[in-house]
Length: 241
Image (cartoon, helix red, strand yellow):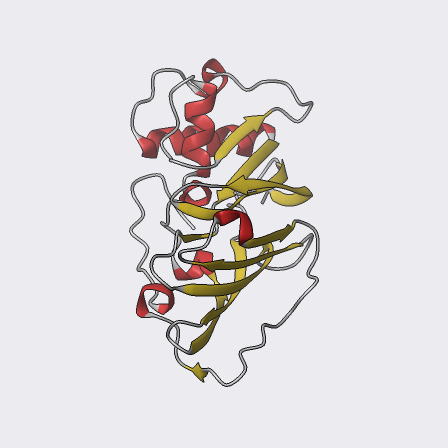
């Protein structure tokens, strides 16, 4: 059977302003598939997009914490769906078809870094199942390089009234089973009725400067259901874990 290796894991970020105040966070997984003469195609290791969210809601006098692998929790979210669609998106890119995801991307290259074209995969395929199969068959026969970019937009909706929210978000991302990992940290403190210029926003792409958020005498409550409830995966044809 063929094998995958995570060659590099790179990250970058930029400020996000508007209705949502936060960050554009990009994590780029550079994967290599080495094929074998015999055996079946092997899917990529599963994504581990681990988040720890610590929130203080001063206007409610409440504090909560939630932690999980978000890909297990909600694999079809707009942020993470590109991972489930990686083979389909690689075909669409090679065939110069527009992306089928709102955020992120996936690109397939030859082992020497050259471009994989629609002709290499089989031109004219229109459904996700056949597109994904074409990419998997190419990798099984030739090996290749797959680059998957996840674009997350962690932030807080612009607060209203006297709302004050302070949030620490800790990322620890990589692949299930080990290998390279990357940590990132976002800290936000926003208050309604105050100019955005007085709010605090910090983002560190490479490490954690904090690992906790003091909540004083606030009541510790469960995370909201909108955050904590898992979403059942509804994979379309060609999509997979």
